[in-house]
Length: 174
Ligand code: SF4
Ligand code: SF4
Image (cartoon, rainbow, N blue to C red; front, side, top):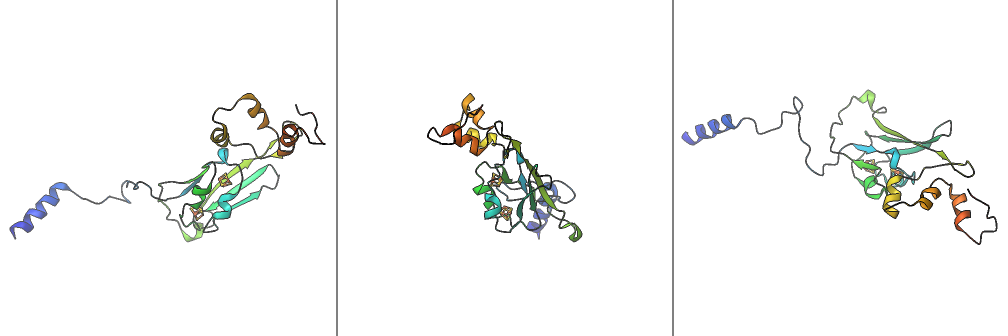
């Protein structure tokens, strides 16, 4: 009896040992696979994340005015497997520690993460192209010198022509 009172008193003094969630903040454990975040700025539109997505939660589609590619991820369909982050070459997609995924059934189709990878015109021929991600450049080259920086503003065809000295179609690229 005495030891029981001791335990009660000790717990009263210590206070609650559980998180007060949802009435207060609760910390996410390290490594928790929570809601997915997308960073359009560093995306190279390789669509690997869409390809490997276990839940079929990711879709890329060209926007109606053809100014870029829209990324959509349905949180409701995501299985939090982490494959998208694992295979993304630039880590433009990653899982966060945000576990707040409760939502109403009527909101399930609107419960999405979206982003727009905007095309930019090739500096030489004007063809719309996916911009080269700054993170990809720094991963590939570390320091980016002037020549490489210039090439990143060219579409793949113009780059091929300028870099291939034996190309029969070689043309002058500014
Ligand atoms: S988020 Fe990553 S894997 Fe997905 S398309 Fe962009 S660069 Fe590729
Ligand atoms: S965590 Fe898995 S299921 Fe969720 S978007 Fe990424 S690949 Fe798809």
